[in-house]
Image 1 (spheres, rainbow, N blue to C red):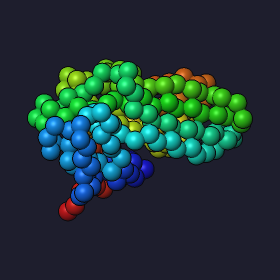
Image 2: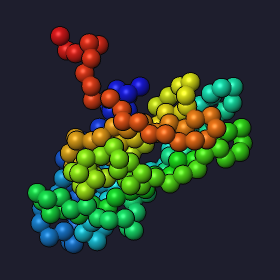
Image 3: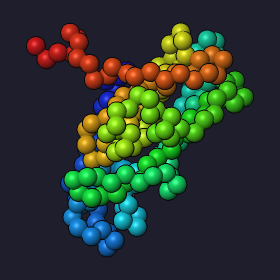
Length: 184
């Protein structure tokens, strides 16, 4: 499932489109190559809004989760030190309904993950995405990423929601290469 997340992340947010978007408010060609779900508004590059709703069964109950990513103009803008391009950070609202009643509802920002980020990602990273990964004995796992804009560098994290609605976060080892992932 981690490989699926990595592939989905690449397809939806990292692969540049060959016919980049340009706008009159962009001073130079630094923003001419945008990812598949980015736009430029008032000179600031932002990811498109996205909402995914799905269900899973866990511990004998039906859970419906919604992951809603929104560019947030109230968060600090991120400036790429090489190009000078400005990026808008995102908020992600995770809502989980269990058997028809709201079980978990939280809006995440990059600041919720700062203890897992080095200085570079705290300063230059964006809250890029969150996807359902799996239902494990300890909770529902949501793969989450903080990424550097216009790059393939990201910090993989796992948000875990326990059966009592408590939240925990762990660093994910998605980038680790083990025997089954080697190309030998």
